[in-house]
Length: 430
Image 1: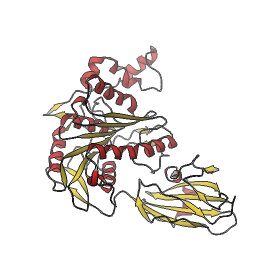
Image 2: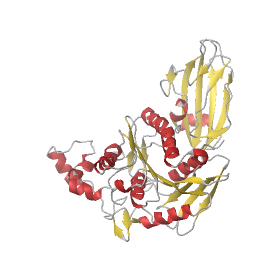
Image 3: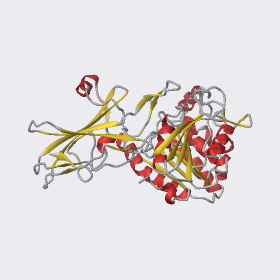
Image 4: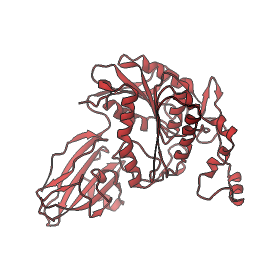
């Protein structure tokens, strides 16, 4: 028994061809995949039956039992889940590198299992990065280590703040040929501690800095954001004409207040708060439930105030001012906020205003809030927000969110290629 050729290192968004060879026809084999994140072991496993040629091929065969169902070449990767501490002890000698995943295959005859470790990285080895601490900016720049100029992407995260999500996204985009600036705008040294009255002028400085870099192609800049950063991506596109394409993950076409709530707005322009909407207060929510105007467990507390068209219009992002195509991606079962419904406010406004560029909204049933690059674990549906401490439900099912990631990622890359000119600058690094 042996694995077909597998890399020792690859990008996290790459699909691996996992095949076990030289089995007996009809033989049952158990595959396990584990990795370690912050001293927690994440494990998946599935049983397969070898075909008549003595081969198990995850791209064509479904497991007969295990942590996922159906044919899925990367099912073992997204279905990893934390294991109890007692079970984790069995993996104590394995790699503590969170990017390294160890694959094993074991048979029932008592023979030792075979194993292969693969390090799945966000940044290709032919990408260079550097910290950005200029003009008051806090970010990290990623660029292909080859002659440019390259199309550029400004990447902004959500209400977690800092550079976590944006740094990983920017590294992946640079690995696909873009110059990508991951930009923090709060919860980082020298920046506000929370998402509260963030000046749009800060992002204007970032766009100026990005355009001035020698490796950046003039007139080829996009913005990518997630959650509150998706809201921000739409707002930046509507504010700065130099942005020629917008990608917004689980966003909102409506502007919302500071987070955590402080009585202030999230965004300012020229020192003035930009108008925003509010959800119902707890008292208003209780009254709406008592009078039958809201349903328990719904997001009516978001949508009831927005039934007032004038109120909704004041808080709407003026997306018709965006100077290029727009791609929005949402999860229908998002439990953090109703990203699909909130995105539709932008879609409706595009239609009403006769927007002249392409607009696409990819809404995925059974998907939750955590849609991004594929193949990462999607099983952690509950988490504590690092800024507010709130307990969050991401929504969706692990499989639904994994499918949304698998489908939307290549479509997002193709969108950027088309929007920014494509060609050599946006090609994957060979």
